[in-house]
Length: 276
Image (cartoon, rainbow, N blue to C red; front, side, top):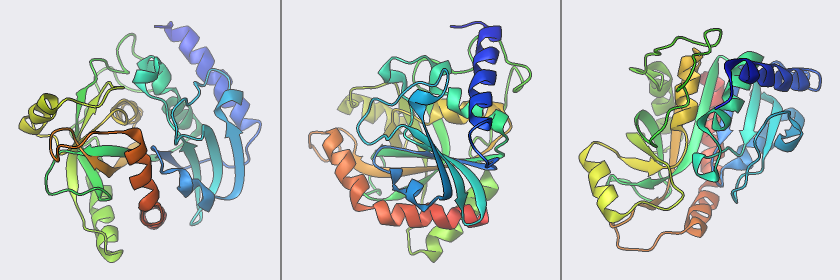
């Protein structure tokens, strides 16, 4: 774990690099999960910065994650889009995984739409469903706020009683209904990965209240809440979790399902940007 001073210096350097190169001061951040990167094609007046060029940024190593920040406008809103994210299982620390959220916070975003591909635990879900996250379970065995608190960025003990903004969820449920997307909410459980969960782990997660499971999102949401940023979370159910249908799981299936619903997902997020 790096020192508070080193982290602050790294953050300042990354932000300075971006401020010098982009003309848009973003008000809304969007994180695109596995296979869901097509939303970035909607961005107008686009300025693209590869992660590898940003000081102290990690780089994406997973298929389906383009690995770049896209600045511009969607539906008249100034946005910064993470086309690809970082995962704990890639070997990054929690501080590295969530570093882009800190960068977006310092750049001035007030809200964050975070998306992911998830396994369905709730048997009322089906592959291709879009589920609004109403709460989460951090089962990753670590927390991005562990260590010295960055007091200039947020409080030592942040409240997560409404980690996913209730008003935004209500707006999103109405938008879903208007677009003839079944309005659904659920609890997302985050595991460390990279292996898919065992059937016994899925039975355990269902018992403690999880509706879907994945390997991301929760660290980013914790840090966003720490920084006073409103969050809306959307899970794309790309497969049913282990033991539910008796099938083997693969990343190929995740990508195929995400590709199949890509247009519906993009249309949904585009409509949300208008009302959030």
